[in-house]
Length: 124
Image (cartoon, rainbow, N blue to C red; front, side):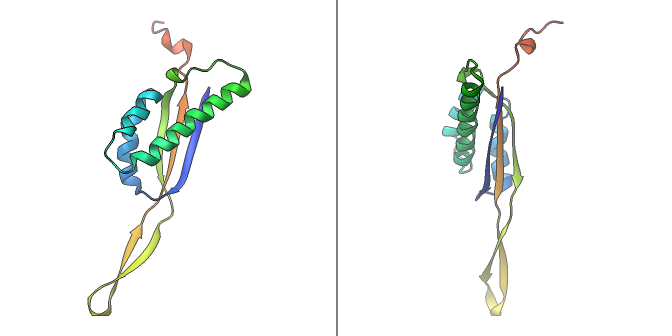
C-alpha cells in the first residue's frame, strides 16, 4: 500500500527544502514526523504537514480497500522537492537603478508505503 501527498507553490526555496527532505527519506513515518517537529529549519513545517497528509492518505486508502492499517509500519519511500514558479520582485537601488529579487517556490512530494513481507525475509 502506497500513498502520496503533494504541496505546491510553497514559499520556501527548493534548496532549503531539499536539506530538510534529505533528513527523512527512508525513515519510518512516525520517526520522520518527530525529526521534523524538532528540526530548526523553517522548511521543516511545510514538509511535516505534507508527511502527515501522506500518512492520512494511506489511512483512507486502507479503509477504502478494507485492509489492516498500522501507522507504525509506514516508511517514507520517496520524498523530493521540485522547483515551482519564481516570483520576480524589484528593489530600488542607488542612482535610479533597480535590482531583481527572486522569490522562489517549491513543490514538495512525499510517498509513504508499507514494506513488503517478502523483503523482510532477508535470505534467498
